[in-house]
Image (cartoon, rainbow, N blue to C red; front, side, top):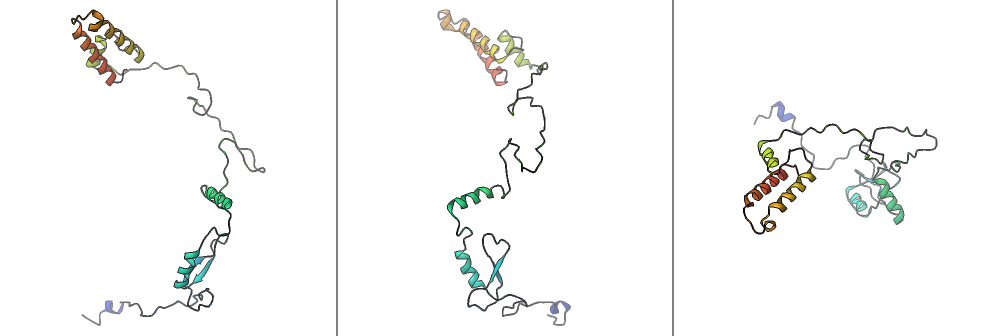
Length: 198
């Protein structure tokens, strides 16, 4: 190791004893003359003001510190409720309440096309609903139900029920001749249901 190195001279070693910078206040605990190197809050309504204690006394002070000391339960609840808004004034939504000296709030007008905010929904002419083109299996499913593909959900369901009642073996005196057609109709309806048509 080279003791004449420029890096060796820059090594800093912490002194063994605790050093206190000049101007450090004395501990404010009664009867203590140690340096007050630790801050402790003075309490409610004195935010930003601190006591200066030594380490032992700041620990003791913090064990018994209570921000709400001297407040009634109702005052504590009001403080907690007020703290949810950051202790800023709030008004009930829609009342437009302001300070008496202020001008009334400006009322903004907007279209409530869907009636979400209590207004009447505007009656608009429905644009022609464009359907996506039908896939081959969907076309065959509509054809099996003897439909065109432009029917509503209720119409598709009503047609399905009518065909099932007509072709079911129990409705035909136990004749199983229309069983294949019934199976085809059930499969077609299930496909249309899975595709979102009904």
